[in-house]
Each structure stands twice: as structure tokens, then as C-alpha cells.
Length: 359
Image (cartoon, rainbow, N blue to C red; front, side, top):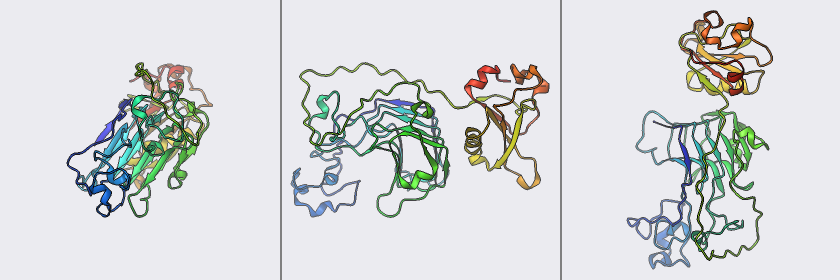
């Protein structure tokens, strides 16, 4: 199952969640024994842990409002895998992308920024809206991508900027017990926020927001923490202007190349071979970190690599030769070479420079 190429924004819960089917001693979050608190049975706020008030009429906080979200499939989704890819999530209430209680997943090439609109009470809001005034507690300190109680997950090529430096941009958590390790991952980038230690080896930290593929300015205010915030209601309702959709520049554009996906007249390097399930992510990573303006994948014909995809990296420092292959190369038969199971990906700049068009 795939959730891909979605633009998700302004998904904000402005009222606490309520579920009339929840018994007074039930809570789907945390590990509290709610039956041991008489205040919970009496439907009191004081003396009843916040976890036990979730979904009840005494809930006076908001911890929901995600962007792209899959949840609670591990018990019923026994085969196959979930994929969350190429989504853009911004301006949502808590996180941008969440993989929750769902196993065997791929989370890749998502752009996530300026989420976490629900307040953290230690930060002063530039505009205090009426729905924020009486919240009793902060949201979670997450506003990026979260893997929650999920096993066999792959995390590739995601770009994240959290709302605050003290928010988690990449986090993995477990409801009791040890956090499951990633199945695979790499080439993820964080421009703002914290990365959990379990994911540090697959995420690189950047300070330039444009590195994360974001070419619009942040819509969230820059705020400093205040020790004792004193929120005041606005005298008049706040009218929000529609949010303009972001412009996100893709790192690579796929070109339809039929059965001739290798540009033989573009100087290139034959790279490694990878199993198909990770071939794109690995080859993209190789291109990102080398002298590379495009890459292609094709079936590896070597006998000891049967079933693998071979990565070809086209050099950014070298020009195509002959010159005719520097303009719409796939339209000239001798510029490209026959491939099996081929695909071709090029940077937007190189696509424009060499007028790379679909075959």
C-alpha cells in the first residue's frame, strides 16, 4: 500500500479529541493503570493523569493533528509493506509524517517543515488564537518525522525542518521496551531540530534550509522560550489568510527512456549494484555525494549479480561528446544504449542545461 505524492497542510486539531466509547479506566496511550485513580472515575482533572484523560470529556490538551499518518496496522496487515513517499507536509498540528504501530514500511523522499502549530507552552506564540488559550499542557516536542512502535522500517532521503530547535525532526519511539532498529536507511537531511540517537547514523545535519529542498521562507515565527508564559485571549477572532502551497524543487527528475536508458556519450562511472528494493535510494545517495548530475539504473547482466540493479553515475565535471548529445540526448539513437529494466534520473539544472526530454 502506498501513500505518495500528497500535499498535506493546515491539518490542525483545534479542539481536544473525544471518544464516547472509551471507558473511564481505559487509555490507548502510555502505560498508566488508570483504574487505580479514583479521580479518573469521578471525571476530575485534578488527580487524574493526562494519559488517562485522553479521549474523555476532561481532556484539556491537544496532542493530535498529523500530516501523513499510518497507524495501528501491525496486528492486521500481515503481508506486504506500507510506503510513504514523495509527500510534502507543512503547517500541520503536530508532526508531518508518522509511521505508527505499523511494520514493514518504507518512508522516503518526503519534505517536512513548519509543522507543530499546536503550542508548546514554554514558547510564546506570535498570535495567540482563542483555541490555544486554555490548553493545560504542551504538545509533544516533535514536529517532523516519527517512527512509533514500528519494526522493519526503511528511512531514505527525507528532508526535515522542525518548528523549533528543541523539537525532534527525526525521532523513533516505542511504547515500552527497546526501540526497534531500522531495516535500512540513509541520505536523510535535517535543517532544524533534534535527531534521536537511534537515527543519527542515517541523518546528516544541515544549516541551510535550501539543502532540504525548501525554497519558501518559513511561515512559523521565530520564538524564544519564556519561563512562565501568560497567554491572553485575542479580543477578536483571528482571520487566517489562505496558505500558499510551497514550491519544492525535486533533487532528481525521472525521464522516460524506454529500453535505452544509458547515455553512452555522457561521461560516466559504473557504480555499485544493489537489490531492487533499495537501488534507487542507494544510487541517489551515491550521486548526491559524488561528481554527478544524473544517474541511471538497469538490470545487472553479470551472472553473479543476477536480480540486482547496476548504478551508473554521469559526471557533472564532464561534457557530453559529441556535442549533439548535449541537446535532447534521448532523441538521438547513438547517444543512448540499450538497457534492460532501465530508468534515468537527472537534476533539474542538468535537465534544463541539456534539454533532456522523454524519449
